[in-house]
Length: 478
Image 1: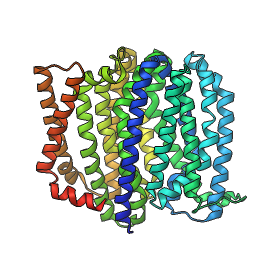
Image 2 (image 1 turned 90 degrees about the vertical axis):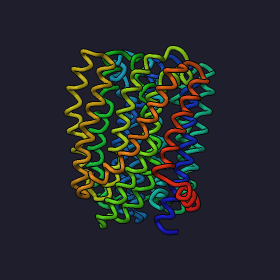
Image 3 (image 1 turned 30 degrees about the horizontal axis):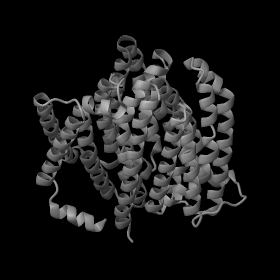
Image 4 (image 1 turned 180 degrees about the horizontal axis):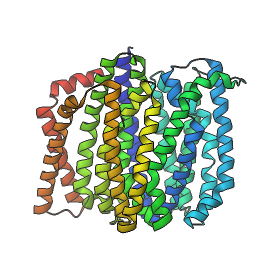
């Protein structure tokens, strides 16, 4: 099977996995929102923040370098494996020894136990991580999908069960650990035919990977702070409970994008990494990625914007209404974010992770004063708007880097983006008209709004973008 067919088949399995795990996440959040208070979500959000920060250093960028270099040397992979395990143990100890600093900063005693339990993640995840990377390198996305689906089901079952038993925020943490444990076991089972670690470690063997990864780590650090500065500020200044509201709004607006984009990007990166010397093909692939991402993401975001006041009470129950106006801001953050994300594939394919490092450094420098001043005057809403402004600036710089890597592309991009934007405006207009005439409260109105928006977008797409014959041909390929 050639790379194109593998990519299409991989896209099918990543799509299946993403749809199932995303639905599981929504069901889990909907159930937990009725069992847990905003403070519990805020506590878990801070714990996740800490884990994500340390995860930057434990990875050292090896996942991207292994795929970029198409690494297959057993001694090199064994050295990387050993280094990751050691770093995981070190980070486990650091989190446990320094957790009191986080507790003092947020003035929330419940964080102590949550952080200590969360730290076990680093003793689990790196057992199977390298196998997951190798499966992606070999374009075996069916195996990757099975791992994600089984892990997601197991984690959701543990989380919901423990939440009903009264474990509160710890139910989410134990669920995450259970999910990762199952995923690590399956990753080893599927990937062991490509690599079995030996008792070998030589730092010189991984110098090239470390050099490649250092920019990745630097980019990760700045990306972390510029992406989470709002969460840090809200939790530290406005309180952990307000962070709970902010987190729920962010998850509803941003989470689908973070799940849908990898359907394209997870498959695209190892495929285009094999064509890194062909500039015209890279440009064509990048534009195709933007085309697909805009057609998939934009209608979801437009629909969420116009139906937020209908679906939030249905999904989360009473008491979560403060998230509605935040969701409407985050919809625009998501729109710019999803168009910026494909730069990842170009930067790593061209061996230029340093460009991502500088991009996130500049964005962080811009974002810090915005978050501070707007948060001082307008509270949580000001911080959300500051996040949006910083995202727009990041988007402009992002496209400047793309121009540097592949040449002029804005005219082609303009043609690509025009139709989904017009379709979304028509979608919003039709749903708004329905809400104005009929109303927006209740399950029936929410279903009607979603149906109207979906019919408008799909109808326009089939009429002016894809024919039924083209869709049937694509289905046969899949």
